[in-house]
Length: 334
Image (cartoon, rainbow, N blue to C red; front, side, top):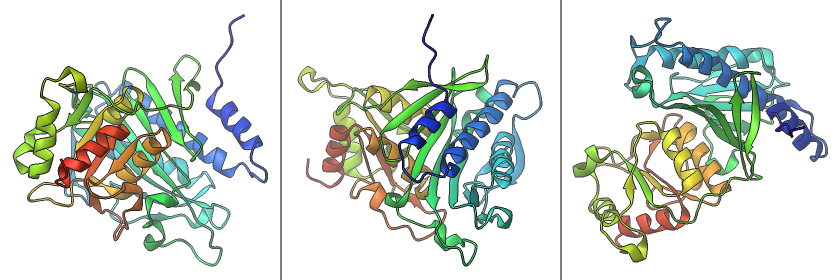
């Protein structure tokens, strides 16, 4: 008789049992994220058949055109967590302001920040998509959380992870005790444990960057990417370029195989493009827990002091040695 892999629910229950005083609320929150993943995955499978491709005609707070699937994914997160009882506030890339949930407070002790559909430029082309989430603890019982309560350093996250919608649907997360991956088995509708204590190689052979922005990068960034293309067997070069247009997909590739992802600041956008609180911070938490590194080029991502909810930041993330070398070039030390 074959051994059946652990389901997400069973794994969470077992993990909870090893933590004295655990109430189960946090564990249930993670299963709710899994539920959102199932809903969005099902919509994506039928996207070309049910008129949810294309744009809504609206623009989000980031100034970006909203895809129909962006709006649908955001609504799925909101609807699931409005009735979960575990989350007292939500913040999203697609919403200008956070949503407070009086019905879940004060028993709901967590705040969820998320990018509901990462890589939405891929939605009409059957390319990889993802979602990213960050969980913060809220301990006050005298008032509902405000926007300011959600603007915290990445070191304060209690959990983070992502959903990946590709050839299979995956949920990857960390609670600060390593990184675990679960793959959705559509036949039974369950996430099964497929990746245990993921470790990213110290050095890779792949880089991911939008080289269409090459001429907007700093001199140090350009020199680093140029160096990756030099043929040198002793240092494992040249690196192979792999860029999908979906941050989650590119980081997932590096998490399993090593390498580096770069979305640096540009001459006209020195602050970068990616959002700190619900893209860079959660992915940095995951990658660091797997033994990798995440940087702005000059500072550790998780220690960046956020000033506003939708703050942008340069992101260089991946294998430890690769990120450290990129930092050396960017800082003029190489």
